[in-house]
Amino acid sequence: MPELARLPATDHTGLQAAIDRDGGVIALDFLPPHKTAALRRDFEQAMQDMEWGYNDEGTPEAFSGFTTKRFHGLLKYSPDVESILAHPQLLTMARERLGGRVIISTGELMAIGNGEVKQRFHRDADSWHRAKRDDDILFSANIALTDFCQGNGATVVVPGSHRWDVSREPLPSELAYAEMPAGSALLYGGRIVHSGGANNTTEPRIGLYVGYIPCWLRPIENFAVSVGADRLATLAADTADLLCYRRSGFHVVL
Image (tube, rainbow, N blue to C red):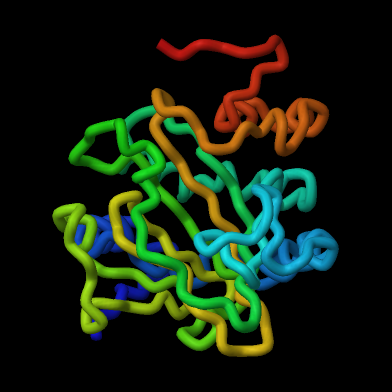
């Protein structure tokens, strides 16, 4: 069974090389323990208020999960989210991988609960399948707010699949599990085949996702709606720019 490389979050060159080679990598100690715990605390009430399977996209369905909770507008829940969205290392990696100016496509909190089954395999970049490109148009980070293990729904990743023909299906022997302690992050490109794992434990597997795209693409999330203009107006200018927000109104990028 293949394994993803596990490298210190400070090993910038090694992380980029591993994503080039395998499609994804585990960055250990990406967040300090106090920030990981603070984020988990900040999201706790919102997670309690949402029923399993129901998310801010609608009623339960197989891809989003029947015993999974998902929500967006993360800036409403935690002051620490701003530092994640504008994390210097994530921005540097995204700009190097995608070229030039980047924006954020979406931020999502995902809690995979007891009894959830494995999600179907997919490529995240297929959200923009009409953008016919051979290079990456998405760079993603899934930050573990709890420990990720095979038993509780760690992301199932197929190393090397970012170079496959789109019709190829993975074999069981080609699967790897993004097992990592809380505070670590799975960093990956938009073309790698992956899925959320099955949770056979009694505790939820909680991850914070953020995805970056080139500025010429449309983001999945409309932050003016999911977060609200009042909150966006409080952000640092550079962070607001990542969310395509201007105090003066909409702007056009040519």
